[in-house]
Image 1 (spheres, rainbow, N blue to C red):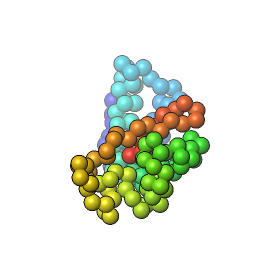
Image 2: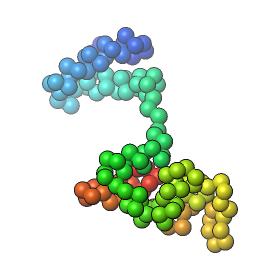
Image 3: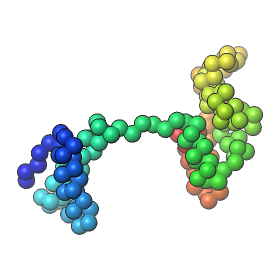
Image 4: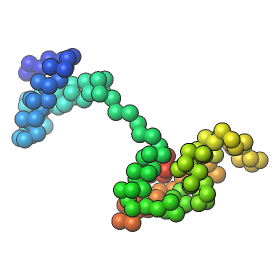
Length: 137
C-alpha cells in the first residue's frame, strides 16, 4: 500500500479522485482496499480542516435559518428564549441569548449573572423534528 501525505493542492486533488472511485464501489472495511480508503479519507479530512476550515455560523443567522427551514415563527421561540419581546431583542441583536451575554443588563439579585434562569429547551418543529436549544440551532 503506497500512500503519500496530502501536502499540496495537487496531492489533494489526486486523493479526491482516488477516493471518488471508492465511493462508487466501497471496499470491505477489513480489507487492504478498505484500509487504503480509510487512510485516504483521513488524510483528505486533515488537509481540508487545515486549508478549507468551516467557520461556525453566526448564532442569530443560524436561528433565522432554522426558523425558515422549519416554518417557525417568532412565537415558536418563546419557550426557548423567553417572552416575545426578548425573542425580538435577541433576533435584532439588542440582547444576547443568555442574560450574561447582554452588556446592558446587570445581574439581578438571586441570579448568577452568566447562567440562564432556566435551561433552554428544544424548539419543536411542525413536522415533529426537534433541534437543540437556541445556542446550537
